Image (tube, rainbow, N blue to C red; front, side, top):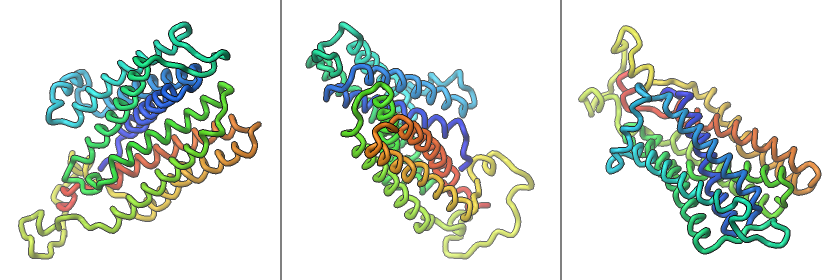
Length: 315
């Protein structure tokens, strides 16, 4: 498939935003710093909104995007839109609860103590954020003509990338606002490693699993071996531009290595350094954030570029 930049930025930025929402909800339930939670919510709102705006760039008529909301019974795209908007409600409500004078805290004012209603809002925020990311993943996982996207690990990969990028950015917010990060570093490292391992397993699966049909099936000769000796069109068309994207194996291998280094190797090294050199925590975590987001963009580009639509059998 053609890797449109609008969709790449949409899935990466919205994943980061909803990942931050999820961690903000977790932090609120476990009494994190109000300043960190507010910063996470604001950044989550900015990132998720920017991602949703990017998604409009891939629509033929962006002004008609509102019509997608009406198809939530049958369309994962519509469900994602509904979930994305619904998630703003608990996010804003939790942000309002975290404002000065709106909650009780410890004597130093460094830990949140929400009421039962506030805890319910935080739990709803976690559920809505994860549901939105799941709907985004299912937009692609439900497309049967693209076998690489229907792999069972795709929804989990999207969820892990959202939680991973959100966790690393959350760590940087904690370090910047002078709150302890040592206890959270192992959790973030485990998420990074788990995401990288799952993604590597996904790449191995799509490399070794043949397409469910052959070129013979495509042209109505299922028991014959069919070879293409002439292009079906004399020039490019919508199908060849959007659905028949060829990426050489050697380039894909290099880009996969780049993605794994940026997503896993460098961030883990930065977080280990932060554990043993506390004075350099903010700098090392800033490098980890840049690295993780850059790796997520490369990974998402590969996700689209290496997805082979069955219509390519004609070409």
